[in-house]
Length: 178
Image (cartoon, rainbow, N blue to C red; front, side, top):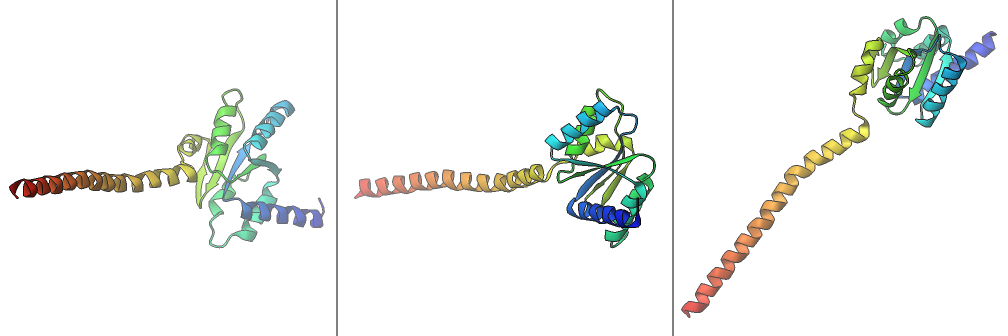
């Protein structure tokens, strides 16, 4: 690879890392061509982009966009055969890896970068599977906000019926006395 090709590859990786809030670093070595193709197809179907990268180029790309050392703990995962899964949904690569590994022993998780947190090691897939998506969290917040409001509205409506009944009774008493 010439210097020019390396600088182009680094720039492309910088762009990818900048666009993706979440990425997983995996080892898919020892998979057959058929298994890799199957895994890539599943990635494509779920909106995950898989790239096989050279570790030094990936590290240089991360160093080029790093501001406060947020990627330093990722560098230790950049050893051996490496493929990176770029995604917009933090949980979907973990689900894919878990599902795919029910029939295959790889790809293994080296590290995952999720909102400035780094999850290192293959055992972290279980933790990543428990992450809630942005949509799930928004739904929970809306439900929490709606709950007190619905109680207040319910109380006002039932109170309105009670007040209305009370006014009607008082009005009937006043009419019956006159």
